[in-house]
Length: 92
Image (cartoon, rainbow, N blue to C red; front, side, top):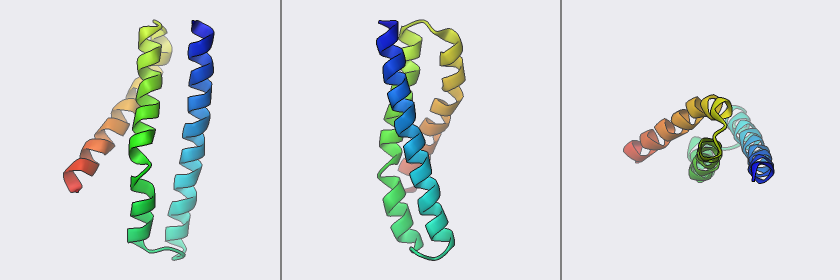
C-alpha cells in the first residue's frame, strides 16, 4: 500500500511541477506583452482547480497512510491552494 501511495505521489508531484512551469511561461508571456491580461487569466484560471485537487489529494493520502511528517510538509501548500481557490470564487 505504501508503495502505491508514494508512486502516485511522485506522479502527482511531476504533474504539479509541469503545471508550475506552464504558469511561469504564461506569466512571462504576459510580461513580454505576447498575450493580454484577459487571455493570460483565462489560460491560468482553468488550471487552478486541477492543481488544488492534485495537491489536496496527495496531502489527504499522506494523512490516511499515517505519514505525519510528509503530511505536515504538504499542509501549508494545500492550505495556500485552498485560500487561492476561495479568492478566485470571491472575485468571480
